[in-house]
Every structure is written in C-alpha cells, then in structure tokens.
Image (cartoon, rainbow, N blue to C red; front, side, top):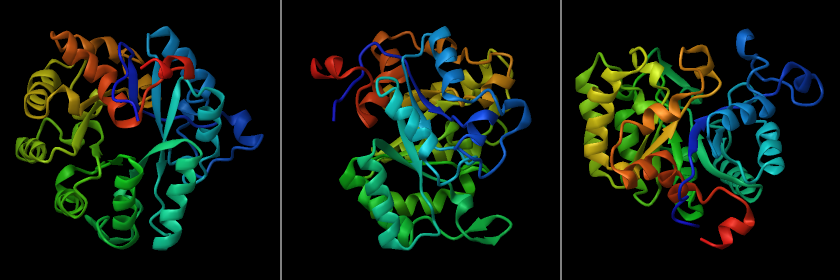
Length: 298
C-alpha cells in the first residue's frame, strides 16, 4: 500500500445512494433517504460537486439507505476507480465466520475499510448496546489489521457512550487502525468528553476525521470549531492522524454546501501539515487515489 497521496484533496467521509430512478432500476433502498436529498446523493451528483470544488478523490462510506447491499457503492468504485474507494458496513447479525468472510470478499472487490455502527448491535437499554469488542465484531476488527483495512466508528449519540468499548478494541488489537468519524461526535457543549478524545492520542493507531463541521453546534465559518476542537486535535494527534471529510450529501443542507475543503485547508498554515490533513493521511491509510499510471510512479 502506498504511503501518501501527494497534492490531492481527498474527501474521507461521504455517502452516495441511488437516485429514485436508479433505485427503481436495480438499486433499491433498505431505508428511504431524506426526501430533500433523495436525488442529490447519486454518483453523478457527487462527481459534479467534487469537480466544482477541487476535490480529487473520495472515500465512500456505505450508507444506511442501502445497508448491507454494497452494490451501489461497488458500482461507483468500479466505474471510477481513480476517484473512489469504499468503506463497507459491518453486519453485527452475522456469525463470526460469515462476518469475517464478508469483509474478505468485499476487500477483494475493492473496499478498503470497514465501518462499525454501534447502533446496529442489539440494544441493552436506551443508552447501551452489545459491545463491538466481543464475538464477531472483535474477530472482524482483528482481521482488519491483517488486511490493512482501517475500521471507522460512528459514535452518533456521543463518544462517551462507547468509550470503554473503543478502549477494549484498541487494547485487543493494537495493529488495527481505528478512525473516529466527525470529531468523535464531541460537541462544543461537553469539554470533558472532548478531553477523552484527546486522551486517545496516546494510542498511535487512532485517527480522527475533521468532518461534518455542522454537527458540532457551530455556525459558518466555524471559528469556534477551529479554536476549541480542531486546533487541540492538531496539537494532540498531528496532521498525519487527521483526515478532512465533508459528510456529503448532508452538508448540502448547510450554508457552505460542498465548499468545506477550502475552509478546512485554510486552518493550517504549514504546507506539509495541510497536505496530510487534506489528503495525505487518507492516502497513508487507504492507498493512493489516481490512475494506475499515476500510482505506479509513486
């Protein structure tokens, strides 16, 4: 696997799903997308947004709208291998051998990462779920180290609810790269939880996505996010463990639309750090973006 993606802007977190026409033609929804975004998250729509905003490549995270049917994302990877890579969604209902085999199969088809959504595990109470760090989840997590596939964790209801579970994963398989989505979902209202995120910098296998700025409770141009969240993360983790991401298509409902790449890039003065944040870290974790000819020269 290559170690960098020089001078390329890579969106490390976005989703695509079929348009209504595509859904009826062979890519049905498991869960209906938001009506306002139903026809704004297709592969064609994403490419138009990327081209208009100077984004060279993207890591497509399997959306809940197609759940465990990865065929639409796979079609994006196969039709535009120079632009797209994929992160598959782990199915916690599978037995251990089947879960590992599913990851191995999708890896052979071109997926380069695995997403853990803890809310797909069986629920124990209103604020707890069966742990990701046991059974098939742990087996997949360990296998990902061998496959060099980072695992992304979505703590949508807050990092604190899953912190101990994440610590167990880190200790059980220190060779697996773990990526926390969207600043670890540490809002601007809870500095104590954010301090826990900073403490994870002690684990060199942990990276954080600087993505979905709008989810932290700030307004454009996100100066509070920059000073209270991004700058401490940059100091604690370093740019080579941070990744820019947009959270397309949901960002389209925000004033900045798909224009966050230039904003986040402006937060870093050092050219080398900016290069890592905006694409180099993604290249280190997931391999280079570009044509086969470009990759062969690196």
